[in-house]
Length: 316
Image 1 (cartoon, rainbow, N blue to C red):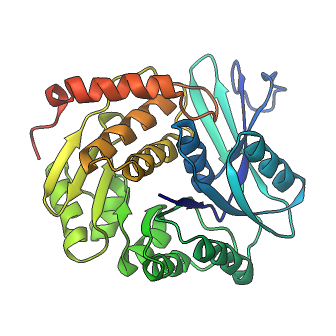
Image 2: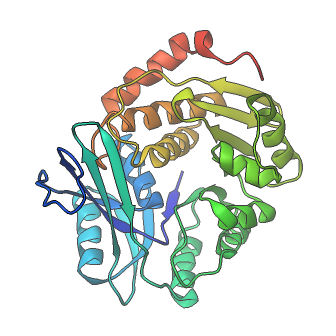
């Protein structure tokens, strides 16, 4: 099974720690950790950690772009890069060690022209993947309807399209229709046009998206409570084990990576969601932007399969 990930707004992710964040003081920080970042790139990194392979497609430019490509190449991840003018952005995460609170600074991306974005889609069309994952925000220069084009391309080449984004970009793409959506509760509420959903309304809301053709599968992310898997045949709560949280950076992308890898291995939707929760939970156990360790994923996946039934919600 071929997997392609699309990251239209990639970044160098930089992370460090300091004892306390104090305004207008010079703060002594730990050595900076630098990782290749951006939604789809993180998904490719996660798939690689699980022993799978994908092609990470993204635009990049400047010194940051060169370093981004080199980090991925050194990690053994296949890339297909569209060279652009301008400097690939940086994101910065600072953890206050005295409180374990994390402060995340997300910078705007370099402006991307439609021609450059189209070049990314041409790479996808030539590859003809079985699974296409688009994750992350849209960069300046692209309309909020751009993921609709991606959905149309996926349908044309018969690829299963998985989208993980937010805001109007998510709403527009859902109108076009795709294979799998992974909204959180706020995003699901927006998708069905309500201000807020109660927990006992989540399954019906997700099912309504499937019935109107927005997608075939919905995995509603519930954070530390796991996720709700919804298909046309029903729904199931997949609980998350309790872990010591160090960072939430990349947890959602790790979840998507686990789900896509599971699907490529022929696993059921239930196993897909279980592995996704295991990967997302394992990612929160690590500091900075390193995603998850496979041994922790396996341990948490075993827990979900063995004990998950005891911790499922009963009020849906």
